[in-house]
Length: 99
Length: 146
Image 1 (cartoon, rainbow over the protein chains, first blue to last red):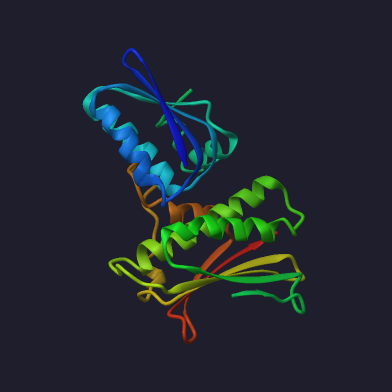
Image 2: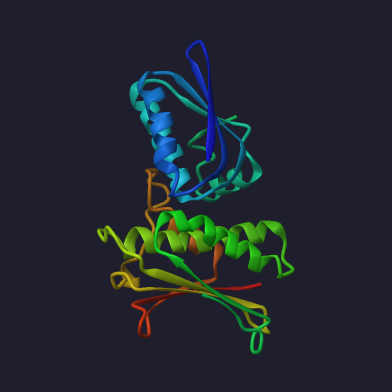
């Protein structure tokens, strides 16, 4: 997994790239959680994520819940077909903020 | 160890992987290689790869929980029978798994974790835990009629 972060005002956009599995979720959390804790609105761009497993989905849930807790939000952007399928399999399309 | 046996099944391929999270990428690559040889649509291939990777992840996370350092290997065998029944066997030497206690979380109770087993059950027709034959401790069998 590789990533890029861009900042615009209070919005941080995290562009993830590659495959998100148990082996890289700690790296993803270390990247996303501090932005949420800083009360940034976090946009996670998933256009270039070709694979995500239950560990990756857990990071999305944890990020979403942490954002609610601190009064901000996480929005998932340009979700790839394969990731959307896994989100829907987990019945999270009504829970997470999808754009 | 890689093994290919086409005598009784349309496809039967076996590979060993070191039990750690870094191997999950190799597990997916192996699965994709095997499924390239089967005429099924890409969406189903992706689902099967996910189910296999989740089962392998469960071995790393649960069967080897609290086992800090090891160079143990797990074995994955993907077979497609003449009747087009896909069987995926997982063999490991971790802590014995009681299949009756393996449950996914309530899907409506949204929280991190507990989804891997749910995905496996959604994708596969059957999930069976058996005691492994020596040298294995656990033998998990996932099946699906293609």
